[in-house]
Length: 147
Image 1 (cartoon, rainbow, N blue to C red):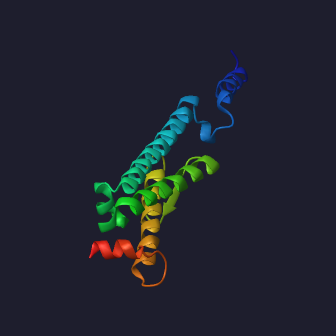
Image 2 (tube, rainbow, N blue to C red; image 1 turned 120 degrees about the vertical axis):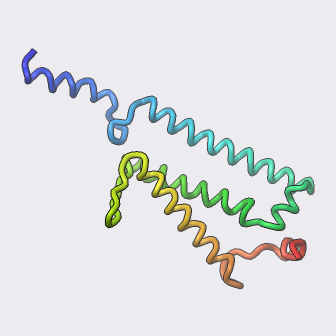
Image 3 (cartoon, helix red, strand yellow; image 1 turned 90 degrees about the vertical axis):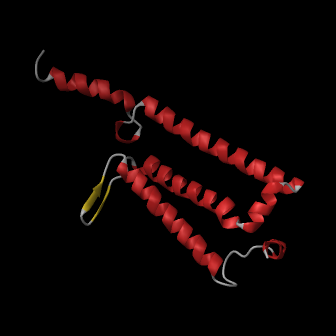
């Protein structure tokens, strides 16, 4: 086998995974989709159960009334942060970025980006909930029940 034939063989074997970011394998792609579907199914079941408990006046209604931000809003913030990371990873490939003094590559890139996204979303939610008359305000019935 000549040196010219060897690179062609390597290119032929790696061309099977074209169309996926950074040579992602079929198994990795399927696992990502399964995890995403699992998260969506979990959140549908979770919020379906919450809705059922709210409509039937169950115990969860009092917990939601007492601490809406911890029971509902934080779950949405985590889901939004995950959506941002998955969207960027799907559209741009492997997430790698640098901060002065640090380089985030491999698995650390998406994790750090998720943490930063989650903190940004929760900070925005907290800012809108803490200012009177600006942003989300719980219904009067919830505020009365929490007193």
